[in-house]
Length: 268
Ligand SMILES: *Cc1c(COP(=O)(O)O)cnc(C)c1O
Image 1 (cartoon, helix red, strand yellow):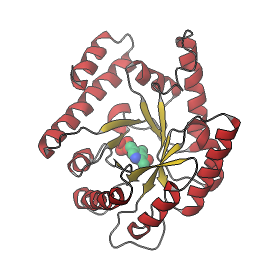
Image 2: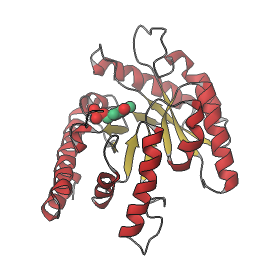
Image 3: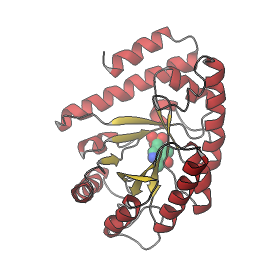
Image 4: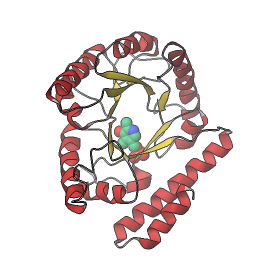
């Protein structure tokens, strides 16, 4: 059964209105992904990461019960509290499988936002992957924190790290999140040689003032350059609600979708 059919039938069986809405939204997003994959002629299908920022732990629990296993967050303070709350909710709901939120077959937290060095220690406690590594200081801080967590027994495997690339062209000098494409190989080397980090690939957000398709095409080229040196670094995290088709067309392996699954974010 394909994802769209599965989520439609989950919507039919949902016993609360919010779960039903989330299931219908997931069905629609998966239908868009399937169409985009068909249009692109790709043989593989990208994974969906549901971005749950601004939405409560109960929504993450609903997503989990619907079968979603990959969620994304962009602020450490919110994500740390939510990950802890979701763990409690799932332990209460599934007392026979304590730690359901943490086992390898269970929920994976993807950190996708700009990250301050002093938050590395917190992020490695709950994150499976950090998509937003963009400078050597942050990479070193993540590795140091992951090494400490491994020593303390709070992490059992290396932290996956993706290099965030700034796709603006020409590239301004304001360092708004994302490494310059010319720095990708040297930063990749730093991650690949770090004891408790695993180099997963690249991540980017489409520039505001450009068609996403050529920008994501540049990301695809950079990814080929990277995986020629580091064959394991094949992930391309790109594509949001607005531009998922362009990202699928350019080879994205992970889509980060918030709004089109959870709805409009509450204003802060
Ligand atoms: C919020 C966010 C997303 C999801 O965007 P939507 O428009 O809600 O789909 C994806 N990537 C990053 C880095 C984000 O901060």
